[in-house]
Amino acid sequence: MARENKLMAHKNKLFVDLDGTLINSDVLFESFFSLLKLNFLYIFLVPYWILKGKSYLKSKIASKTNIDVRLLPYNNDLLDYLKNEHKNGRELILATASNKKFSEAIAKHLNIFSSVISSDENNNLSGNKKLDAIKNMLTDNETFSYAGNENIDLKIFKYAESAIVVNADNSLLRKAEKLTEIEKNIPKKFSTLNSVIKAMRLHQWVKNVLIFVPLFAAQLWYQLDSILLTTLAFVMFGLTASSVYLLNDMLDLESDRRHPRKRNRPFASGKLSLATGVFLVILIPFITLPISYFISIEFFIILVLYLILTLAYSFVLKSYVLIDAIMLAALYTIRVIAGAGVIQVMPSFWLLAFSMFIFISLALVKRCSELYTLKEMNRLSTEGRDYEVSDIPVLQSMGLASGFTSVLVIALFINSPEVIVRYSHPQLLWLMCPALLYWISRVWLKTQRGEMHDDPIVFSIKDRGSQFVAFAMLIIVLAAI
Image (cartoon, rainbow, N blue to C red; front, side):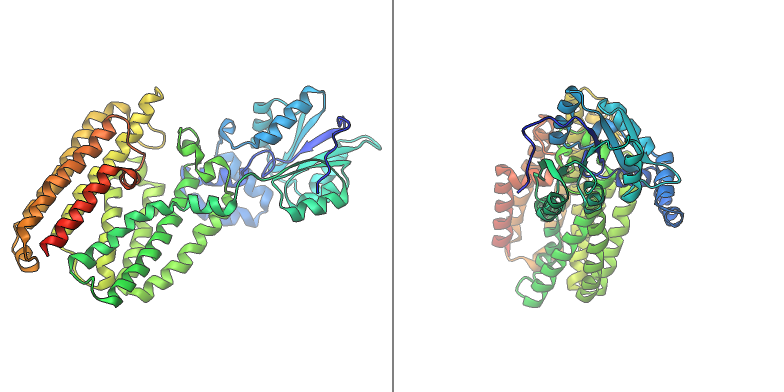
């Protein structure tokens, strides 16, 4: 068990690591995603920069990006301890492998460090190089303490009089105990697995239920093989969509940290490392794409198209007013097309038309909800998206018109010849129209009142009125068959 020195105040110099220690993040990854958001094409220069060395990579990225250090997810337990030590007269020095541009900005912001040692274009201050830099700051026989969080920090713990171990597992803590006195142990307060699950937004998988719509529309729900393939497609699409959610959250770190609710997302809050996110974003498609090819070539092509469209949305299109809403509607609709590809049927014109109009309406609900939140915060426009609070009346009008048009599509569908062939009691389907009109009106009314969740799908899952409408419409369809 870690031994903490409670008998005396340490007055020797305390060197503090940055990444994973002082902040629950990594400045290199933070700046990398800031670079990608600035211009995705920089990704083709990154391999060249890596070949020239890690210090050169950090320097080049730092020269092209800026990070708002005030918003970084600081380890508050450690920071409170450091502030107290600083107040008691202890000299604190920030010692990090991060580029000096960011480390100096962080030191200036916190105003508790007397100096900073960090990486520049020619030196990557990590491991033994950091140890040498620390020793160069000490006089003969002068002792020091060090705060770190990784196995590479053991090289420094070995020479330190005491160690502050941060966010470490039990294995690292035991190794550190064998090397030096543990001045303080600050354990990790959050579960990586729980953070991964939250970041993957499994609750959003309800959107992928749309994959089952063609199965029911074609009245093939009694075919076991079709059900099993569609279920597998549902999982593969869900995992692929989750990888995109992970990427989006890593690209939106700064804007999420300014948002009253999104700041609690795993990446924005520092509960999940960006390195883990990168690993999952690469791993998941390597699993889902081969399996999707096994399901059907049509589904595979649609899933690849979905990935291409979502990447285009994430890096470019979501910053353009209305284009982003149309893209969101298209990404909803593509789920219906994917479901048709699984069972190899042509999606109905009526189904696609209904999907496009209803999902444009829901996409605009999402934007209006965000704008109402900004209005409450006395902000005039969104960050990273070309929307202003003054746009709310126009967006509401377009959203309601699109939602009601989807009901008109349903009405025309009910009156089409194919309905008479497929349904025994098609007249019952007319009951869907008032139910859908009520639900669309309710969603927009909740949005106008500021009661809408950022995502209308999440709202609908939890909202009793929406649950009742969904159940009623299911009964209506079953009764009409």
